[in-house]
Amino acid sequence: MLGTGLSSWMLALALGWESDRNATLFAFLGTVLALGFLTVTGNALRPKGRSWFANGLAALSLATCGYFVWMAPKHALRWPMVSPLSDADMIAAVLLCLLVLEATRRTIGLTLCILVAGFLAYAVWGHHVPGSFSHRPLTLTEIVDHLVFTTNGLIGPALAVAAFLVFVFVLFGAVLDRLGGGDFFHDLAGALVGRQAGGPAKVAVVSSAMYGTISGSPTADVVTTGSLTIPMMKRLGYAPAYAGGVEAAASAGGAILPPVMGSAAFLMSDFTGIAYADIAFSAITIAVLYYVAVFYQVHARAVLDGLGAFEKAGPRVVEVMRRGWWFLVPIAAMVWLVVSADRPVYGGGIAVLLAGAMAVVMTRDPLRVARALFEAAQDGARRAAPVGIACGVAGLVVGTLTITDLSGKFSSLLFGFAPNQILFVMLITAGVTLLLGMGMPTPAVYVLAAVLAAPAMINLGVPVLAAHLFVVYFASMSAITPPVAVAAFAAASIAQADPIRIGLIACRLAVAAFVLPFCFVFRPGLLLVGEPIVVLWAVFVTLCGVVSLAAGFEGWLGRRLAPGQRAVLIAAGLTLVAPDWRADAAGLGLLALALAWVRLDRAGEKLRA
Image (tube, rainbow, N blue to C red; front, side):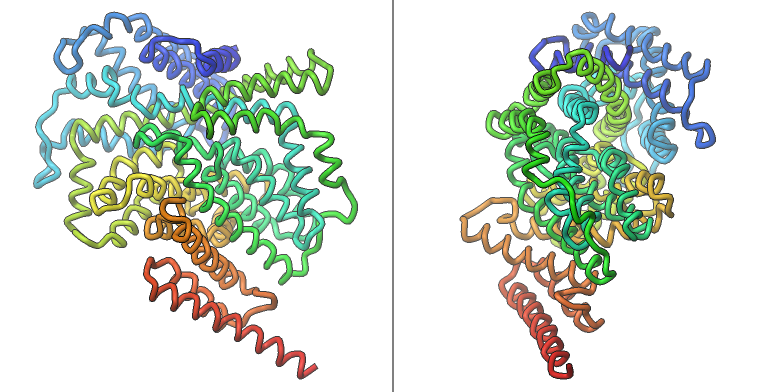
């Protein structure tokens, strides 16, 4: 009932019901903490199952957050960092921080828990650190006051985005699942590309893209679409690790594909003040380029390995659309409200209601639809709980960074190492983001990297939109980057293969994603910024670059490539990243050389035949 109540309440808020912000966030936090304790044990030997201890922690979470909800009117009148805190306030605040850390350990892992504990330790003892990283002495009361009783910490922007924006889209994804939307996307993808060479893998790419743009979660995408596509690929001759890698790479792209993208994009809108519709519009081209590269590599591997189509006979596009066209109605309404009306949360709420209404009309079985919606409400709450916990613990880190000014010190350090070397700072930012992403969910990775590293890029002249999208991309790709790649581990459980090998294959298939962020920072036209001719040239050159990289990494360009040809193509792709006409000329020249070389080889084979 907790999950159903939370989903109903968040849906009401999305549709316009008003409530006190802080009280709502504390109630939301208490509920997701309780759900986390009731659904995950944190014990790898017994990942599920309740115990009296878990039940006690869940009850304690609800009681502690209930205290803050009850005290919200009184706390709203005090001056943070000035008015004194009562003993009950201090006990409840410290207890809440400990509960968040334990829930983080259970739902996300020990790595993030240790990282957050390190930041909190820095706040307490950082004044003993020598040099520029020292800060003024802070009392425990000051730290607790800042972390729990202000909007710069636990109930800051990250948790607000999780509650007021992300939750409704997670709920919409769960509703589509329960009503059969996942099967519709899978069938539609099969009808579109299933009869081509490498059909099963292409179905995985297309269906993961269609589902991922709604769910925005690489791991949820893998679990949902991968449960269908990975066994299908294995049955038709794909190696288990490769099948898992295809699904992981395709699912990772869902977090960067408009119109919904992922929760990190909503956080970015809140952090930067840029309208979400503008972010989604700017991200369209680079998301499409990513999927073009993945699709090409999947096709190339299928041709090289002689892997055939998914099926010779099956439903056509018209037949699939006739059966499930109504799934597109709530999605279209949501897209319109998100992009045109710039009302993302309202769009998500309307989409949920519209999906239920359309299901009743099409199935003429209100009881079955009501049961499906009830189950979807529980699913949505369970899926959103780790996101809410991650955003809560990220708020603790952000609060620590702001009270100690560690983010400013880190940016100054980066700028000091390379005062005018933007490429160096970008490489460090990418590395830090991927490192933070080892075992952490995308929203938490984005929050930390956006506060720590993005300001250094902005100080060097990178536009705010490009700098934060750069972080969003690498935060999303951290889901498939070994050694701890959450999407790869999810795929491994389905494929029954080594997760590290799956992660490495996924990274190879997603090679474009590790290059595209550098491209759009250097070429703003890729973000649809600038004159039409500038945008068209940027898209053309980058398309040539990602296809060159894809062909070079897979070793196919109309025929099997020799090592030298692959090297030339990879060099062409990397050269086309640089924003200079000489680099463009050199990269296009190398691509032309590779094409001519391949054509000469083909002509020579025909003569010898």
